[in-house]
Length: 159
Image 1: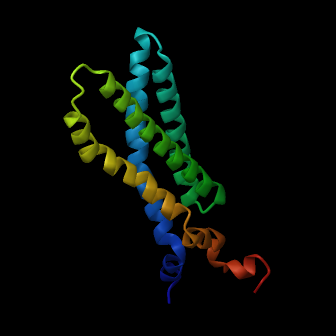
Image 2: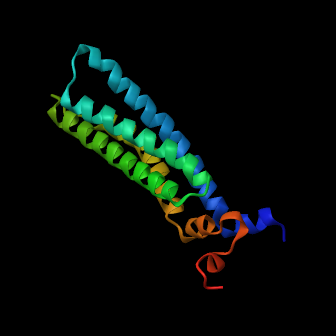
């Protein structure tokens, strides 16, 4: 068995897939962050500030965490975890804000919100959830412990 296959069987696949799932999150939260910051020249509203800074934090955690995870450092795993969890918080907060706006409208029509939820928000929630599942899986932990082809047992003095 080759080294590449051996490494792939011990969690490299889930680690690389988690890193790849972080890329759309970086792009989406980066776009939301920029859109929030562009509105600041008209004045800063508290929700825009929270949204912009929250998305900035998600982008930094996911971006740096992805690079560090692919370098097989454990801190990268926790940075991607924090970034994906923060992304979930930002998406769910956006959904709650849209619901509040929907309730405050005159007509109270939910058709637009349901269409938005089905076509965009449901897939948007899948990315961070899948990234969390993959990055927190035991196989990713095993891959991180098997740096440079050293088995986890030998690294901890158990083998």
